[in-house]
Image (cartoon, rainbow, N blue to C red; front, side, top):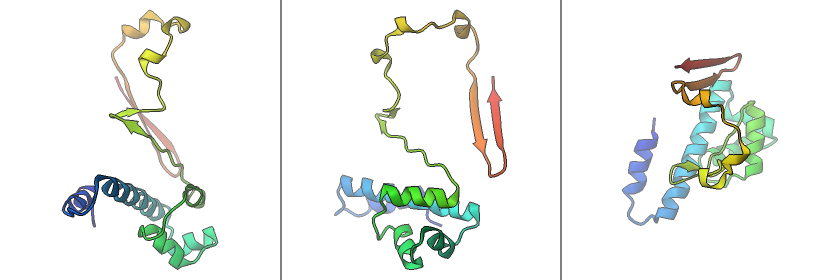
Length: 139
């Protein structure tokens, strides 16, 4: 099975590809691989996904191979058919752009209880399985 690292290595071995083309191919690879993993987890075949989408198996195959451009609408339809949730995070310099920068926040508008600074940091990880949600906490 090809991995992200293998694919990136392969892309970087093609000198004719621009950085923009490499970024596009990497995004297509990551999205289609995640869809294939979600299909496997849900027990869906390409034929079943095609039926759920009202498309031909050939259409779904070309979407999942990256040959056909996938619109956000199609991605949403696949998400619905598989019973998954898609979350897209756009990062700039490793920071989620949807989060306010501390410089942009008027801290005088917020009351921060001093006690929160006295506690050790806590990591919270939530794993959502098909049938249950498990929260792991580390203090």
